[in-house]
Every structure is written in structure tokens, then in C-alpha cells.
Image 1 (cartoon, rainbow, N blue to C red):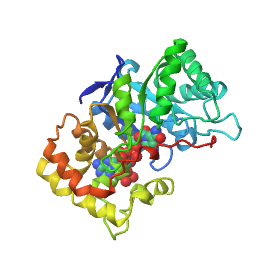
Image 2 (image 1 turned 90 degrees about the horizontal axis):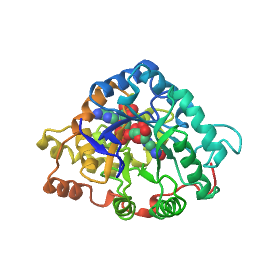
Image 3 (image 1 turned 30 degrees about the vertical axis):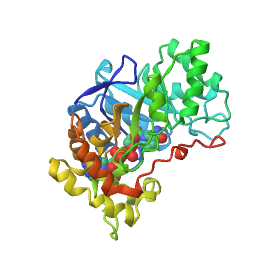
Length: 332
Ligand SMILES: NC(=O)c1ccc[n+]([C@@H]2O[C@H](COP(=O)([O-])OP(=O)(O)OC[C@H]3O[C@@H](n4cnc5c(N)ncnc54)[C@H](OP(=O)(O)O)[C@@H]3O)[C@@H](O)[C@H]2O)c1
């Protein structure tokens, strides 16, 4: 496993990290979840990503149990706050009250005294940015959070936050967590150039497009048994990519991967890691074999002719519009 700096910070992260959205506390049983975490650790993954909202807070508990007993200094634990975790108006968003309470809940469930990275899981249009950033800064000073980042913020929102942090002397954002894959490149036009200039790294999610880029979903055929598309929670999220045009073009990536001696999943993960602004690619897995397959993408170099062939195959199905990065207008 190779390691990269998280943005311009001193923190090193494994360039492939493990995330537990959809899986822990939901799609997969606790035993399978623990086996995936064990496989990740055995393969050299040290960076783990979760969120308070995953599986209604159960995912953090499962990860906390799976990592119990592992030397804390050898792990980077990332979690997030914003989406609703309770019935009340203050159980969501980025207010001082909710961030503080949410972090305390996350620390308890993860069985740790601090998280390495605390991320705003979307932009909150109903809280002054100063209030959010001041609260993050306070949590850093209290030692409960080591670094702060965001997820799916636009370049404009990140830029505004950096200006406030610089003016007020608050801790600066070091990362953004956007969706990024061969199919979804909306960060390239605006978020990446700003991040390179300002020292934020991208911790990218769904690099395998939730499984679509493995090629296992075939055009005109029902999804394979036990896959995310057949899961009650996961099915809704993957549905937008399960159309014949996408699936037909993805099948045409197979010879490109085979020529390189890579699996399709490895090609997909290696592709996002070619972008030097990416600090880590977070992969999900419902089985330990998937983790062992995907980690082999670490250190793979893709030549420019390969990147061109991929672009030629995917053509018009690649999404590049930066306006596709959106946070809810009102708190959910
Ligand atoms: N910040 C955000 O808003 C946000 C949003 C989404 C995700 N995330 C983070 O990113 C992480 C990864 O997201 P993701 O799970 O969508 O990523 P992904 O790595 O693109 O997809 C993972 C899924 O693809 C399938 N898969 C993975 N490797 C495979 C292989 N080698 N062969 C066959 N199938 C394979 C598995 O699903 P099946 O076996 O069930 O088919 C697995 O659960 C999450 O856990 C979370 O930490 C963050």
C-alpha cells in the first residue's frame, strides 16, 4: 500500500481507504463486516471512512467494534456530520449544537477519544459558515478532532470557508470528499484547481461507481444476486447508472483492463489515483475478496494512451458538469 499526504497537511493516509456506507449495519452481517475490515488491515489500509448517518448510526458502531484492539496510532478514522440522525430540528445540519452533539455520539460509537478527520457531509444553507467553522476549530483545540474537511462542497463554498478561516485564524479545511470516477468527473473543472492552489486533497468516494465499473452489471440482464442493485437500501443509489448505454460502454473497458493484467475494479480505482489531487480513494466492499482485489490498484501507473482509450470508450456518458455538485437547499 502506498501513502499520500491528506492535501497539504502533514497527515499521511493510505491511498486506498475503506468505507462502510450501505454495508455495515445494513446490507451485510456483522461477521462479513468484520472480515472486510480485517482484510483491509491485512492489505495495509490504515484509513477508514464512515458517517454518523450510515445505517442510522449503526455503521459507526460496527466499525468501532471491528477496529477495537487495533493500535489507535496506526489508524486514521474519518467520520462526518450533517444528515439527520434524529427526529428533531437540531438533529441535522452544521449548527454549533448539532456538530458538538454529533461528534460526541460518533466518538462513543467508534470507541475512540478523537477522530483524525471530521467532515461536513454537505453544505448547510441554514447555518452561518462562521458558526460551523468556529465550532470545528473549537473541537480541534479540544483535541477531539485532528483535521477538518468537507464533502461535496462546491468550489465557491470551499473558497468562502477558506477566506473566513484565514481572516478569523480558524483551522483550515484540508480535504473534500466528492464522488469521483471515470464516469463522474464533475470536480475536475473547478474544485480540483482551487484545491490544488489552496492545499486541499480529495478523498474520493464511489471510485468503482458502486460496483458498476466492475462490469458485473450486464446490459439487458438482471443484476447479479447479492449485489448492491438488489439491496433495498443500496438499490436506489445505484439505479441512475444502470442503463444499457452506460453498461454497454463499461463492458468495452474489459479488454483495456485485461491488456494491463488488471481487474476492472482495479482499473477503476487506479484511474482516480492518477489525479495527483486525490489523497485517497475510498472503496466499499460487501465481501473481503473485493477488498483484496481492489487494493492491488495501489501504485499502478496508467499511461496517457490508456487514459485516452478509456475516454474514447466512455465518450458522452462521462458527466463533467460542475453544477452537479449540490447540497440540499434546506436541511433534510
Ligand atoms: N461523502 C459522501 O456523501 C459519500 C457518498 C457515498 C459514499 N461515500 C464513502 O465512500 C465509500 C465508498 O463508496 P461506495 O461503496 O459507493 O464505493 P465503490 O467502491 O464504488 O463501490 C463499492 C461496492 O461495489 C461492489 N464492489 C466493490 N469491489 C468489487 C469487486 N472487486 N468486485 C465486485 N464488486 C465489487 C460492492 O458492492 P456489492 O458487492 O454489494 O455489489 C461494494 O460494496 C463509502 O463507504 C463511504 O465511506 C461517501
